[in-house]
Image 1 (tube, rainbow, N blue to C red):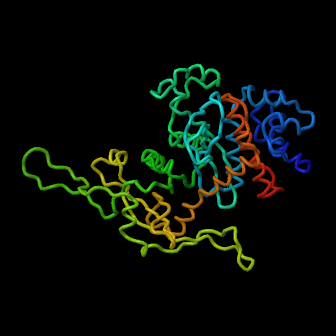
Image 2: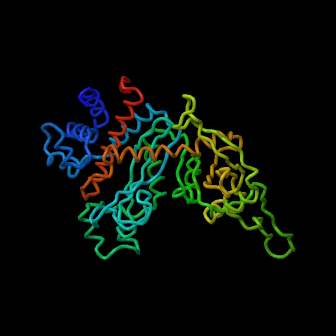
Image 3: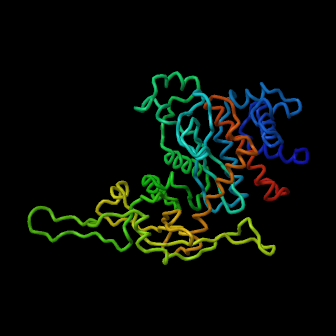
Length: 411
């Protein structure tokens, strides 16, 4: 860290330039340094103990109570990382903070992939800029379950007291994670960045509203979906029975029921699968990296479902790609994706983007194991957002050093 001292000062001054009150930018730099120094615990007190001349109360006041806005910091961070990474996609996902008590904002018994089960936790949703070699979170939302929203039928009797204690703004309520994802896409787009593609897991891809929202924004996507998502084959057409000369003419509609993606892929069978290699893996053979490869089935379909039917009433449902990964040693596919990319898109390109979401899992692992993402012990809405913003900045700094430690800051 001593070797990178001047570089960190420049980075902090650039990204946290909106923090104009005396001492705030210095505190931000100290917090970043504490996050990046070796140490098992990255909460305020142990971090301050590793920093020379830094009092833990001052550091805690900065992250928990100081009223600095995270949006200008995230905007500058996003612009800087967009220029450095040149993202191939924006990835949406969520991760959990395991908690013991009930005071932290948004904490509830809910499912998190962090534990692989329903447990007491907070859930944070992030938007990451990703490529195969570099990635970084640039925006965050803390998910509020219905139990934390006074307007929700799931609200607890003490919800007002808990919200006041956690200092949750009055205008913040429960929003589904896919809506939070669209909110972040809109926000980052408003900062002047252009999304090349959206990738997400089935927690987002299963939502017809989410996929429709991306399409309405003119965004391409490759999103994972569950086996139960319903589709029509590409060849499905709307028909109407003969007009009998009485009343309104019958409207055209799809007469056959939609089928699940699982059943449609099963109908074509494993012989339709083709082997695709998409990137170098971590294993080597004869000194060269071994390509990641698997078998995939590709079909053109018309995604169905209540939301899409309503949005395209009296019109043909739009076509999309259905992709299924069907390894040779498995009796059925292991993953499914939908994509609104053009029919001319190459199969390898589709798979490269479908598999690109692995970078966000890489980020979460690094953010937690190396930079203390889930070590914050504060219990306020503002403190949580300050902490995740500072951790994202620390991650961005590390990413920039890996990419090019001598690169000058962009104008």
